[in-house]
Amino acid sequence: MKEYSSAFLAVLLAGGIWALLASFGLGAGSSLSSASDRVSTSKPGIPANHLIKFKAHRTIPGGGKIVISFAEEAKYSIPDTFDYADIDLSTSTDNYGIFENRNLGPDFGGGADMASVTTGTSGVIAISLNPASEIATGTYVEVKLGNNAFFGEQGSDQILNPSENGSYRIRVWTADGSGSEIENVTLMTSIVSPVVFAPFMPKTRGNGYPRGSLIGGTTQTIVSLTTNFIATCRFANTEGVAYDSMTNKFSNTGTYYHSSIVTGLVGGQWYSYFVRCVDTLGERDITDYEIKFYVEMPGAGAGGEAGGSGGGSGADSGAGTGGVPGAGGGTGGVEGPSSGGGRGGGSGGGSGGSAGSTNTGLNTGEGGQFEFENQAPATVIMEGFAYPLTEVNIMKDGVLIKKVPSNEKAIFSHEITGLKEGTYTFAAFASDADGRRSLTKTSTFWVKEGTRSTVKVFLPPTIVLDKATYDLGSLLLSLGRTVPEGNIEVWFGPTEAGSLVKAAGADKMGKWSLEFNTKELVKNGKYTAKARAFLSSEGFSDFSEEKAFGIGENVDSTDTCTRADMNKDSKVNLIDFSILLFNWGKTTPQADINMDGKINLVDFSLMMYCWTG
Image (cartoon, rainbow, N blue to C red; front, side, top):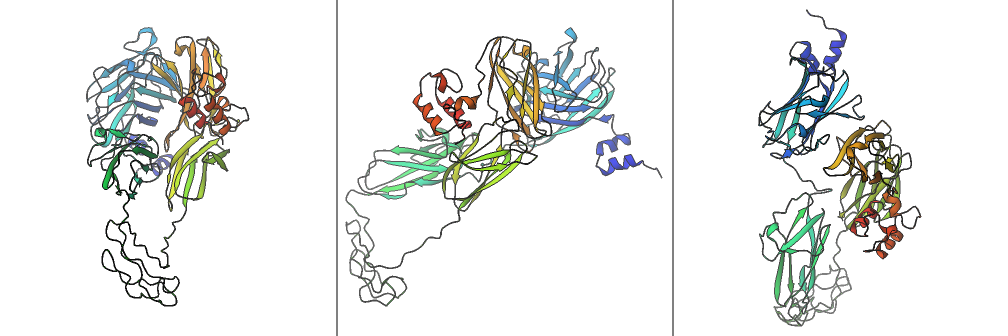
């Protein structure tokens, strides 16, 4: 019987399947580790970017290859125009460190690596290393495929996803100069049709107004509804009209409350408005939400019910609830049972008016009142990620209500209880361990009584630059804080090709830093840098505030939130908002938060991001 070493048994017990296969000679080489493929979209049949990463445990020699095969199941399709410009190759000694780009071209000219592409559904991308440049043992490798490739030349083509939902294999391997395989890994990518989730509950439209009857003489009214998701709503006067075919758009829409004034109403008619909305992901309603009401004739009553309780003295403890007389008239019926809970007897009902008459037929007795059961107050839970061991400021409708600690993993949670039904704006912001303040994450939605809603928060990273002005070709240092061991993207721009995106990683305390060679910006000018974080469980955070810097020229490097604090009291609140409104439409530099020469909605949005209450 064959004896296995304790190390081998440890691998087996840990579930090291690939290592087990290799030990029996079932793998062509050892496995690449820390391997992943991040796609820009998992939608079927849609072009997508790929970001493939792995760790090489064996040296890839000069003249060796990195091969990425999409031909395993012949479902992906590489377009005929896909070439070396759509590929970036970079390496790092740290999975979360700075990745240095390698020159890549159609041949080895200028010391570059050479890329070759086999297009179509049997697509293969091969990168041949320059004979004079190896990739050493233990190096982390990153390959960008698509228009996310920007080093040297900006990529323009993407790889077409499979047309059906499912999991698909992409095989990656390294080889020596003779083509013999060194290491390999098979990646699995899931292609899934998008599912639209409402932020806090199933998507609903409700609270339609008006309902029932409007008094005679009404010629105009406000038609409105609320949604529990950000939407743009339209309406039609006939049912079954598709959203895109509706020509009537609510004059107030784009958030959670939607309204419009309708005119030309005539008495004696029913009116119906059929509403459909589209959310921020482009998902359109395919059913109508009807708002229906009636306008009375001028001077007409509601043709009330016939008289109320019968006459007579009644029992000691109840108002009569006796019989109803014939339609259009008559006095009350016989004395009712003593169950009303009011004073005895009552004075009897008035005789009922005929349909359409001005007599309301009101019961003048004092019977008991029906009580509606109150629903429990609502609760909203604010939870998510900030920075390690800091205080998170929780606000409701612009007012600070609680400071909540985050733990060493940057996680925080707080319950806001006792909320009445209505629309609220909740917000969260924090300062990192170095005193740098985050932007404010806000969320506005309709809260329904008796419900529990959860607001997921992923605060953007903080960011600071080492200086404001650089010479072209000098190194720019950006740094900040985020969640522990999170991934960071720093976007530099604008450039003619868009933004340059660089990757960095945070340590266990959430610290991150990135050095960037400004020669990639090509020419002197004014630029900005902004960052966002990524967690596999949460996706991307929002972007941080933008930091301005100049290449060869000076810029105002005051940060966004400092500029939003217009009266310099270390708060961004209604006082600053009033200053902004006073300067609305002007060019006052002190109120121009984004420094574009005008005070408008962009400045207002930035102020909301920085709001402290």
